[in-house]
Length: 539
Image 1 (cartoon, rainbow, N blue to C red):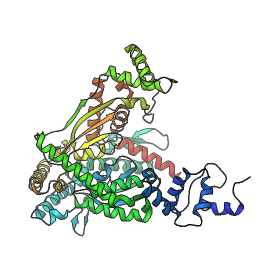
Image 2: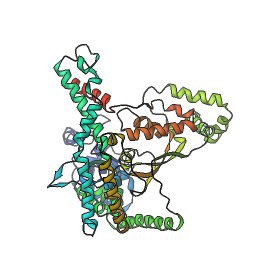
Image 3: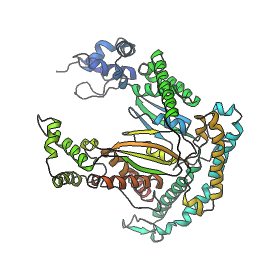
Image 4: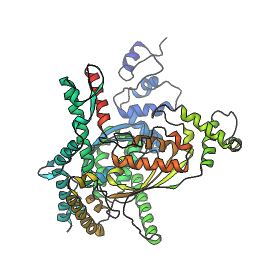
C-alpha cells in the first residue's frame, strides 16, 4: 500500500521523479526548496516526500525560512553545499580567471581554449584585452595600451603564416586516414571515397591549426579576455565571492559583485553571508594574512630571481619509507581490528623483495589510465619547484587535488621562444614584443605591482611549487603526457616522471601509461578518433 493518497501522489509527481520507489530525484522548481528538503531530511524521521507535503507545500517561503534559521542562526555551513548554480562569465582577464580557478573544492570550470579559438578579433575596433581602471587613469595608459596592442598585432598577423608553415612542414600526404570501405588505415593519396577525403582534410586542418595556435599563444598578454563557465555549490561560491571581494584588483572586486547579483537570483539563501558583516570580516582577514605575509617576507627574504625554466623535485622521502606507508595502507582496510601502527610494525619486517612484489601485483591489475591507483598511494608526497611559461601553467593549474602556490606574474624569469618561431623568421618580432612588454611592465610595476601582471605575455616564465601525492602524480603525469597534449606541458610532465622514477624506481612503475615520445602533430590521432565518433553519431 502506498504511503500517499491518490491526491498526494498527484501533487508529488510535480516535485519528485516518482512517488513509490525508494530512489527518486527531487525536481521541485525552486533550488532553495531542494536544498532545504535535503537539510531538513537529516533532522526528522519522516520521508522526504512526506516532509514536502507536511511542511513545504502550503508555505512557499518554507525553504528560505529554513535556511535563514539553519544557516544563519545555527551556523551550519554544510547545508550551503546543498544549493547549486551554473554561471557564465564572459570577458574576464587571464589574471582574474586564474584567481577564480584557484578554488579547489566545490566548483568545476570550463574555460575558453587558446588551442581552438583565435584571439585576433576586434570589438569596436579594439583588441579584446582588459583595461584596468587604475592603469588607464594613470600616466601609463598609452604605454599599456600600445604594449598589449603590439602583442595582439604580432599574434594576429602571424596566424596564417604559421598555419601555412605547419602544413608545409607536415604535409597531409604524410599521414594515414581510415578508409570507410575496407576499414584500413591508408595514406591520404590512397583514399578514393569523397567523404573519406573530406573527412581527412577536416582532421588535418583542425590538428595543424591547433598546433599553430599552440605555438603562437605565447604572444598573448595576461590581459587577454576569456570566458569561463562555473558549476558549484553555495558554500564554494560563497568562499569564491569572499576571496574576490578581498582582492587588490578592481576587476576581481567587480566580478564578486556581479557574481553575487546573479547568484542571488538563483541560490540567494546559500550565499547571503558573502558580503554581510561576517563576509566583510572574512575579507579583512584574508587581506591581513596577505599583508602580514608580505611584510615578513620583505624583512626576511632577499629576492633572487633566476631566468629560464625549472622542473625540479625538491622534497621526497626514501623509497623504503614510502613502500612501508603504501603497503601498510593497502593492508589496513583488510586487517580486522588491527591498528595502523601495529600493521606498520609488521610491514617493516617484510623483506624489500617481497614489498616490491606486492606493489607489482597492483601495477599488473592497472590495465588503462582510468584505473586509478587506490587511496593507499596517497600516503607518499613529492614537492616540485616549477618555473614554466604562463601559458603552460594555465593547463597545470586545472589540477586541484594537490597543493599549488604561486607568485605574481612578472618578466623576471625570461621567456620561452618556440623553435618554430625561429624557423619561420619571426624571432625578431617575437623578441621585440617581449622586450616591449618587459619595459612596460617594469615601469607600471613600481606603482601598481598587482595590476602590472596584465601586460605580461603567456611566453614569460612563471614560478610556482606543487606538492602532490603519488596517486595524483600518476593522474597528472599520465594525463599530461598523452600525445594530443601541448608540447610544453608534455615535456614538463615527462621530466616530473623521470625525476620520480629516479628516487622511487619501484613505486613509479604504478604510472604505467606515461608517454615519453615526441609527436609531429599532437592533435592528429585525437582528431581522427573524434571524427570517427561523429560518423557513428550520424548513422
